[in-house]
Image 1 (spheres, rainbow, N blue to C red):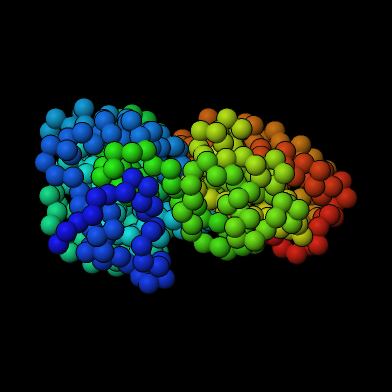
Image 2: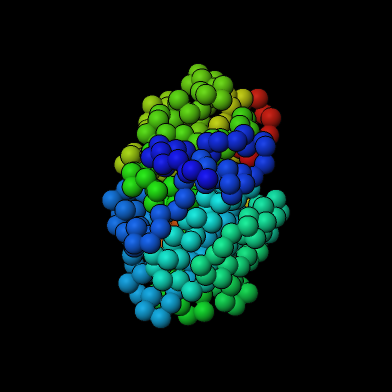
Length: 404
């Protein structure tokens, strides 16, 4: 079969319709070309570094640097762990990759394994993502794999997707983050240097290895009042362009939650013209996070929406330190009272103070993420928080908020 040369601009989700089910291996190779052979693969880390590809799991760490760090330590073998736990309630992009473009992910895992000298590749899939698991199992059965692959079911918990929690679960059956050295890249699964990389990041790495070009695409889950699903967008497109393609205009959009539950709230006006690009959003005090844009409609209440998220995050605590067990729960309870007109006189002052006290005091980053979300809400919905605190009434239609 003649295989076309890879197109540097070939998007991850191009090809057959997403509703048509998973792309077959033959379709995948016909669309993007074969993986580079022989010596070309030894240059993959340098290519990733040159591309500037950032991880798509939320932290935005440079992919090439992460691979090189593991490769330099893998004198006796390493492990590649593809993170498909996707416990973020607003995100569906990693499930989309696994369910409809499984061979793109397998390519990325193969390249990573060869680049870092891995002796095993593990696919860590959220236990609730049944379709993704079935598709990936079938796709692995269609390939000749250079190292052993196995699938591990990740617990259905928000913190289970944190990279140290994934390693902890595979090693000891405990999906709680660890925040003390050694880190996974030093000693992870089975004591081996371990590359933990998000599913989307690996899939794009596989495309980049073919073209040698920098990628300008990324996956976004658009939700909230829209429920528009997963789209592939050009990184650097304005947030307004991405949202407006699904219907809403700035005058009918009250606020946007960018990056998911560990992300940041912003008014629609402040975010509409900003580019959806991790570095530029970080400069603006926002985050692309795991690629979520959730739209809050004009009749919905940001205080109620925030209270629901804080309650969820308090319930998803790793329960291994006071800031999570007591701090997050106290904040969630106070925010809930404010949202539903039962606030105490000092609840607003308390959540402002408590939120600041959480940062960098937890055993993991969970309380930090929750505190960042809360701080952005207090700015974006500041007037509404004050209204709730002073009058015990909501300035909106009173319909329960919904961002998921």
